[in-house]
Image 1: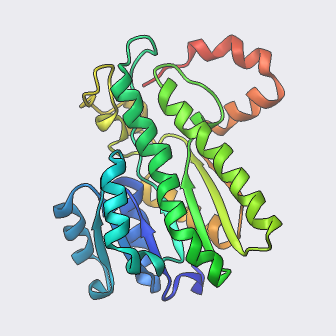
Image 2: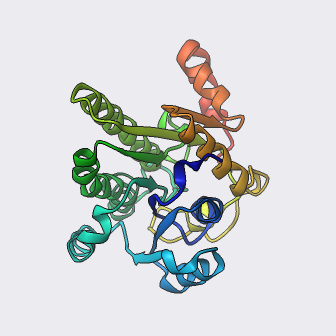
Image 3: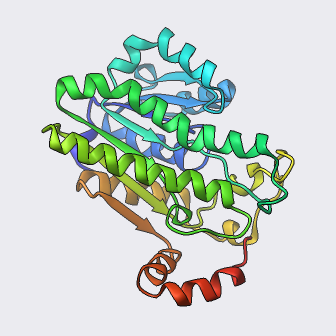
Length: 266
């Protein structure tokens, strides 16, 4: 890795497990000063004490599905947030429910976490980034941000929304000569707890690991490739075989529509 991360304040959401934890473990040795966010204080504290330079990392417990809590946390921690040079919008909730069976509360929670939570934190760090004319925002999207997929309607919608929002923001920043880089990361299946925590039709967690997810990319490898893409100022990085489906949809939409219903959701 480059010296890009040395002494940079990097805010990682969803840091208590999976790819978020992998980001923390890879960036801390290179001098990054981390703000670790998730809902579980105990797991964040365990992670913080496992990292080198423990004393320079901080925990910020936050539930991104709760707008009023977000507002309160942002207000109480304004000085800490003003220091952020890199925001990694990693927190997210997946879905395992047929569209007509998913209740509205579950759909709203997915959108609040995956989209509105990410945009709220982005708007919180942007003013100081723009004033310094320096910064980076890394957004964890998914191939589902580029195409619909069975049992993922609200999840796919939340990821599609991220692309529209951050492509618009990047264009606005460039038009105003602001040196703030945005990276959209689209990993396919990664071996995390995503399917265990995925919301079913009534809003409860699925509670089981999908077979294909269990055979997915190692989170450490995923995080490392995304970090490399960020260092190279890439706009988009694709990981995993699922990117082939993005290509098929773009150039052969009729073929894509003929096979999408055959996709195995687990």
